[in-house]
Amino acid sequence: MSYPTRRRPVWIVTAIFLGATTALPAVAQEDQEDIVIGHYRKIHSRILDEGRTLLVNLPRGYDETAIGYPVIYILYGGQVRNYFAEALYITTLLGTTRMPPVILVGITNTERYRDYLPLDREGNPAGADRFLRFMVEEAMPFVEANYRTADFRILVGPQAGGTFGLYTLTERPETFDAYILNNPFRYLVQRDYLIEKVETFLAGRETLKVFLYVNAEDSDFPEALEYMPRLEEVVSAKAPAEFEWKIEVVEENGDFLQPSGLREGLTLVFSPYEFPAGVGSVSLADIEAYYTELSERYGYEVAIPDMVLAMQSDNLAQAGRVEEAIEMLERLVELYPHSLNGWWRLAGIYRERGEIDRALHYYRKCLEVDPDMVYAQQMIERLERERD
Image 1 (cartoon, rainbow, N blue to C red):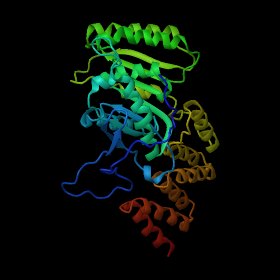
Image 2: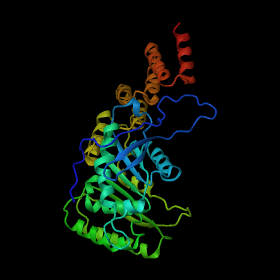
Image 3: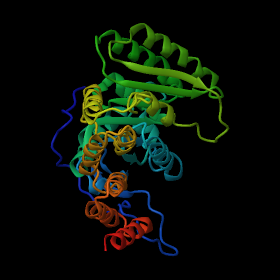
Image 4: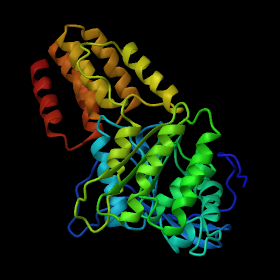
């Protein structure tokens, strides 16, 4: 079955904005105010002939940057307290230094077994092909038209979404750059079918620039677990060049819902993202070269994390290379004008050098970002007294 290219123009969806993501700087909260972790978007699918709801979370500071963000698509996304909130927690936790900030998009279910399974109970074609068309022709173009996305997509497939994800890998692998899937073999009629599809698919490829992580708990259905080593054997024997993968059975964690494997999968996908520790004082050129190489690896422009620039500027300043530290911090505030990491450090450097007017300028920049930053206000008052 053929599909349109990834950048097909959007013409089949309409949207209704229902909420907002918190933006920087933070403001004081009111009693009884809602806790907001995203917003809803409504689209109508011509392919599925029904309305669909997307849940969208934008990374902190989205409105204050011009960079594009990878997108994580979460099946079963309507389970806000489970998969969607879990994804927000994990990406926030890892996003400090170990992975880039991302846009989260949860896809709500209507009839999940119709949509996510390639075969019905009798072995006849089910709805996975149509749902894949919906993703490729409608949902993803809508997201990419309405948000500042990078050309890097990750699919998270818990429960029956794991079956859909493995099927998608074999049908149209370039739809996603990474697949993070929970046990795809829970459904009897799909098992041998999927193994055969994976084997045929891999045998016909010389290269495959895709990440694949598949997990299952050791308490899952014994018949389903038997297929995990079979999948690993097939992938191990036929993995093409550039294909990065990990398939594992993990210990039961006792939760009612099996874990999505998102943290483990993202750790695999972004293992080289964190700037190497213990390299000493490095220049801005060194850091830019490192993330340029990462951009080539991932196929989109990977922005240098603000914390990398901040911490490496500290190393330079401590080594007496103050002008290089200033250069690095100026790059930081250019990339992240609403991050205090750059403005605060620049103010401190100029204060230590006795350049009071420049220090005051940067402390005032801190207050522009966070008007409630008491320390900045105190430093301004102190320096103004010293100057007078």
